[in-house]
Length: 316
Image: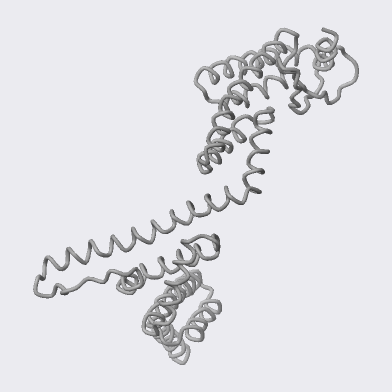
């Protein structure tokens, strides 16, 4: 009881008059844990009446959020209510609701613990992250963050998680190839006489058959797998595919041309924007950059024509 009264005195310090100042806001949960909710400014009587009304509104919002299982909203309303509380009744209600919110967080934390103990690391990370984000400064959120740190230092968990993430990226590669094959099949149906007698079955061969923009996307995705998840089997597969693709000079030339044209188009667009804005010098500079950096692209030809036209116009 003495402990609780000391705590209440700390909360109610602002109602005792005296000089204006910043009052620490702390609430004690039923298990004795003290939650630090920041500070609030000491205020006069008129301001306290306004604060009391606002606190009641936030308490009602927190109660509804708890009923709707909107934990983050409940936390936010209770945190604001704590900064507005003006009497012991409001303080007690805030503490009770914080206790309810903590209990809900502990339930979710137990579910995450069970997932982790069962080796369901992806599910555990998702659930720990949810608790850490939705329950503010409550002990359950702190425990969730500690568990996330533990997973980050667990080599077994990291290997499983990285393989799962790499598998998601591999699905993107597979989906891109599947879309291309679906379109190719549709085109073949329109021209049966041109249907190939055999279809490539290896992933590298399928990638080489993609359009340049699709191939660029797939190569970038494979590169991400190798860079981000180097110890996974998926990274070894991606590395082997990239090595085979790099050995194909025609494929690399096509990919380089596509990338150069994409960059050149970006510079051309900027140059035309400068020209439209009347910034001729900057426009000419970008046109020249297109020619210097990407001389063998159609965009470089366009840039040469623009510069030639500008030169002839100045000579007239």
